[in-house]
Image (cartoon, rainbow, N blue to C red):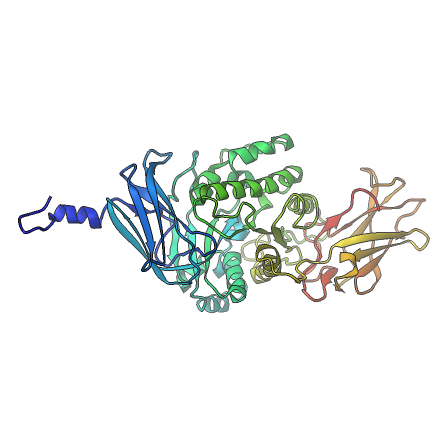
Length: 497
């Protein structure tokens, strides 16, 4: 319809320019989209089911088309896969349909990481040690972009993030203050290795259990390990993870487990199951652009109470975080990397000792394993020392532990932390006694423990390391990698020495 002078009526002009087509809430100005060779996925809402949607990047840098379909909430939803973009940008990203057009500005292409979990992931930049200098330093990283969801629950999977706490932004004092410290510091330390943009998506909630973040299918797979019934089960998956699944991402960072301490056998099932479930759903919903084995990094539980003799449920939970292997990657947790943090106690933290402020150490400890596992950099010594062999000398009353097949030099910072189970059997039995086994000597890649505490014709049947909630002073457990400064993780044997 045109007027006599050939112009469109004003109401039609408005309907084209300001139509009902929109981007999903987790897209916005200043965002980072996943760079090539992967294809970025763009999503949004519209009203005309079946309508064709076209998305363009810059002046023809990339393009993709899709259709408006009916989503689970009955409303129109569109999803478009772009051709791969390897240039950094910035670009404008424009969506066009018969309902009009909308544009995003200052969009970069890089790697997108999602950061999730409970309070230690949500722990903000303003809460860390040396916070003023850390935030000031962070302002320089203009190619790192931030996005944070608000706390939302839902009994059914949502199509979009309902509340946004921090829309996509460049680092600034106000938003950095309220952003995850580990998430940002990871990006800050990773950026010099990549030299291209990083997008950080924070979606976390303090005091939450792993089942709240897991899909119903994932929770059901571990039902034989006992249920942790809660009205919140699946609700964060539904509201804070499921809507993000179409977004093509590079990897995930996770810090959670405090709320599941005391349920180690279930966590040993739930955690690797959740990882695989997230991977499956992200791969499917992102049209295959998020890797089916996307890199997944996490932080092993830190210290808690100021009692070096208290065990509680945390040692078993730390073990469960590795699917009972003691290290990652492992056969049940492939393409997974970990930061050990139990040697970073902060008993005087104003946020409570369960929330240590040394997030700089944690973020730094994630970088080497991320480069090796997530970015496939070769030749890196990216793990703390882990036992490769055990030699018992009953006559000398010693146990010698070799690390990493003798290939990784170690540093010994104190003589404590090891225990042996004194038994008359081949393996430790439930009524057997664990006794301290101090380090009496060491060389470049092994330690020798005294087992003289085993008497009455008993012998060391099994050994464990750092099996307490808060096992050592700050950065002063017994064994570290000499060259990478990474602590040896807690471990235990259960099949005899």
